[in-house]
Every structure is written in C-alpha cells, then in structure tokens.
Image (spheres, rainbow, N blue to C red):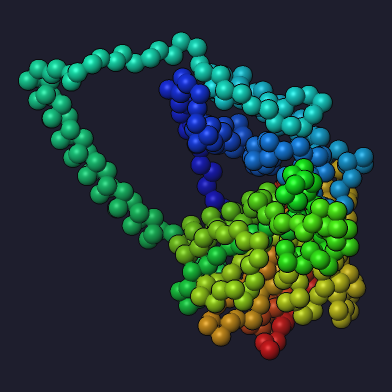
Length: 420
C-alpha cells in the first residue's frame, strides 16, 4: 500500500494587489491540496473539475458524468448523487475557511440551490507594504562580515543536505520492494511505460460557444459525420470542431494511483492523456490504457473473446463455458452500493517486445486496485495457470464498491488470446 503523505500548506499573504492568473492557480492548488480536501479524494476531484469549468454553464448531468464518473445514462430525477456530492463539497469549503483557510485570500463557494463554483480574491487585512528606500543600503563592516559568514554557513549546509539526499535516495532504491511477478513480466525488456487516460470525444461550434455535444457512438473526432445528430447540427452551423480539454476524474485518479504504485517499485513510468492514442501509435514503450467504456471505444475491436456495449456498459461473452453467463452487467444493490463488470486484457506483444494492457470499466479504480493487491494478483495468477499460462489473455472481472470504496474484485471469466 502507498503511504499517505501529509501536505503542509503555507499561505502566501504577500499578494496585496490583484493577483495574476498564475498566482490564482497557485492559490487554488493550495486549497485543493489542503488537509481537509486531501482526505476526500472524490470531493477534491469534483472541486478541480468545477474550477476548470468555472467560466462555463454546467448542467447537473455534466457534473455527474464528467466530474463524478457516473454512467452516461445518469438521470438526475432519480439519482441525487450529484446534488449530494455538491452539498458535501460546499460543507468542506465552509469548514476549510472556518479553520486552516480562515485568512486565505482566494475565497471559493458554491451558493445554495446551485452547483456553480464562485470565487473572489480578498487581500488579508493588515498587510503592510515593505519599506522602500532610495539608493543602495549601507552596511557596517561587522554586518558585511556577518552576512558573508552566514552565506558560507548556508552553502556548507546545502552541500550537507545534498549529500544526505543522495544517500537517502540510494537507501530508498535498495529498500524498494520487488514488483510482483505479473508486473515484472509486463515490464521486462527495460522499455519505458506510459499509463494513458483517453479523453472523451466531444464537439462544439465556434459561433455557438455554449453548444457542446457528445455522441457516445462517435469514438474518434474524425468520425463526426457518422452521427445523425451531429450531421443535423452541422447543416445548421457548419462542421463542428473537436473539444477534448478534459478527462473523467475517476479515470485520472485510477491512472495516478497506478503510476504511483509502479514508481514506488522503481519502474520507469509516466502519465499521459491522449484523445487519439492507438495501440499501434508507439512501439518503443509499454502502454497501459485506463478508462470507461465510451472513451476507450477505439480499443474494443482489439478484444477477441468479449464484446463491450457502452450505454449501459454490458460485456457479452462470445462462447460461455459451463457455469458462465452470456453477458455481464451492472447491479445496483443500494443507493451507495453497486456491482459492475470490467475488462482487463493483456494484448499480444509487439514485434519490438512492448506490452499493452487494457483496463476498462465504469470505475477503473476497482480494476487498478485488483492489479496492485496481493490477493487480486493471486486470483489472476490462479486463472492464468488454469488456462495454460498464455502469453496474452482477456479477463472479465466483477467489482463491488460502496461509494468510492472498493469492497471486492474477482475474476469471473478468463480466456487466452492467440497472437495473429
């Protein structure tokens, strides 16, 4: 398990005048990383989503599907989860400003009865301008000698800290736990690895900035003409332009979690976001694709034994074995508890020796948690051995979650894949 890191936030009260956009972004980052929000990752992600779209008119549907990772068939009339999370975030912000952020100049709020994030900048009271004098300052010989001595001492201390840091890094490398067998095999060959979160494909019109359309049947921004809905709008306003400025928060959180896990084991890995990534787009690095059924649609054709339907997500089993169902779907057990299916697939290696791994599910956090836990990897290895230890395979898993907490993830179908 990864260690929880406590973030110490130091407020910058030196901004007496109107802050620059970069300064505002820096202050917002401090709020998002504050202790009260770092302990609530879903609300922190929701806050970041609202901040990134603060100049837009957001619907409750957009907040639920894009900001909270709800399924595209989300219906606000029967599902109040978006309103509930907005209320919780509103309460978190109030507690933040009542405590550690009492004098923080960037003020964020969500007015009751709405879901738009409001912000203002209020310079802290009592900030004094520093005294400014003309001409060079005058120092006595003793003061100059003292300053010189302090500078030498500081330089020596920095050298000491640098040496200590090198020793610490060396000890961390030596003490880092070894990767489980699956990850050792996937990362073999010494090639770098990229964990990719595909962005949803959306369209807008330049002369209608408020019009934003997403058609789940379109998986590439060049395929808009295949959508009757987009074609009809194009007759009125002309061809649309792709708008791929965001990722689904829950998908990004899952990817970040996996990157941290692999980095802690000294793997060479980075995080990437791509609207048009294809497995064939890069052969000099391993690829791990993490996402939901819609934004990973261009990869569905790579599966040999299962089909994925997107709205709602449904996994069809081509040739069910004894005791296996013909399809796997979602099951809502209560307002907070849900069971859903997902796909984890290790594709055949490229001729260059790079590996590709797909993790597709309505909440990929559950799939990532399985691939990082000892119990989850043991269940995978058991299925893999029973199937004859294939080089490539596809696996359907059933996950159970209570809100954001993963309760259980287990394999329910496993198939080997033959290289073409």
